[in-house]
Structure formats: C-alpha cells, structure tokens
Length: 268
Image 1 (tube, rainbow, N blue to C red):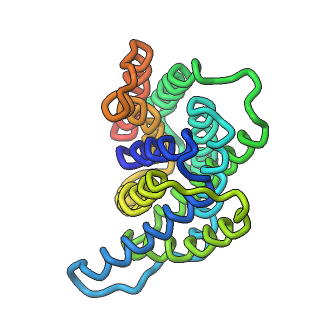
Image 2: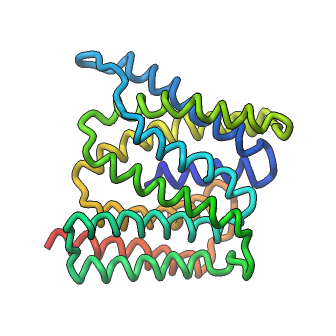
C-alpha cells in the first residue's frame, strides 16, 4: 500500500503542473517498468523463469492505466480518489459475494468505518459538478484495477506474472501515445517522475501486491486498499510540504482503524 501511495504522489507531481501529458506518462511508466522487471528477473536467484502473465490480466491492467492518467487531468485529487477506490472496492466485494465469500459483521463494520474515513478525507476536495468524462474514466480505471487484483490471487510466480503483464501492456501504451501525437509534451522532470513511477513504485509494488494477494480473501484485499489515500495524504505532508491538518489525522485514524477492525474480524 505504501508503494501505491507513492505512485499516486508521483502521478500528481507529474500531471498536476503539466510536466508531462497523460499518454506519455503512461507509456514511460510501463515501458520503464517492463525493462526494470526484465532486469530483475535476469538477476534473480533460482531457476530462470520465462515471463508469465496472460493477456486477460494485461488487458485489464491497460484498461486501468490509460483511463487513470487521463482522468486525473480532469479531476482533482479528492474526487479522483473517491471514484477510483470506491469503484475498485465495489467490484472486488461484489465478486467476493458472487463467489460465496460471506464477510463477518466485524469485516462489514471495518469496511464502513474505512469508507467513512475516506469520504471525510476527500470531502473538501470534492466539487459539486465534476467532469462527467473524468468520473467515467476513473470509474473504468477503478473497476479494472479491482479485476486485476482479483486475477492476481491465483498467480503462483508474482515476478514472472508481473513481468509478462508489463511486456504485454507496454506496446498498448505506446499505441495510445502515437494516437495522441499532436498533444504530447514531455519535460525532463515529468519523464523522471514517470520513470520512477514505472520502474520502482509500479513494478515493485505490483510484485509485492501479487505476493500478498495469495494470503488475502477478496474482501480483505478490497478493504486494505482503502488505506492508500490516507497514506498518500500523509506522504504529501512529508515529501510535498503539505499541511498536516486535524482532518487528515482523524480521517487516517478512521481508515486505518477500519482496516484493522476488518482484518481482526477475518482473523476471528
């Protein structure tokens, strides 16, 4: 979750001041991530594995990555976070219920507390009339990320699977960039931020997430991701010199406390 929060900060630093366009950011992010994963796989100990993954996972990952970047051009951070994580959690919990998972009352209580904390956190940033296109794009990104997480629960080799998925996604992001050729703009700062987002927080974070998913139910995996906006906001106070407010402290306590209640409920 810390890696995902760092990824959100990098995206905000790159796109908010228009240091880079959304298509170029996405392409650099996933091409650099694929190269980093290939390098990591070549130096890993043990038997060499060919890149794994599958086209279904790659397709939903691309369906998350492209709308995510383009939506943040049209939405502020508060609205974007609420739509993204709301859509992701709803899709994952719906899939869990469909598959027969029956969360306990403590898990439902923890989820409700965490969602309340998320709404409280982003409420000042919500606008009365957000961009319909931005909301739609972020909703698609949230559902796609939820599906990608669910598909990751059956992965046996996270490094090989993530490498294969990034290799399949990279050409798609380059195609999107080519389609947006007339509106591309890349500054050195934007390129560096996109590179770090891809090679470090995306590539590394996705490997760890796939590894963690092997020990999580779909419901628990949905709930723990609600901690990302709080961690990103707290990271903003440390790395971006943003103000540490009472609202941030209280909302972070609600979100992390709700996640803790939900995990404790599953343990019982």
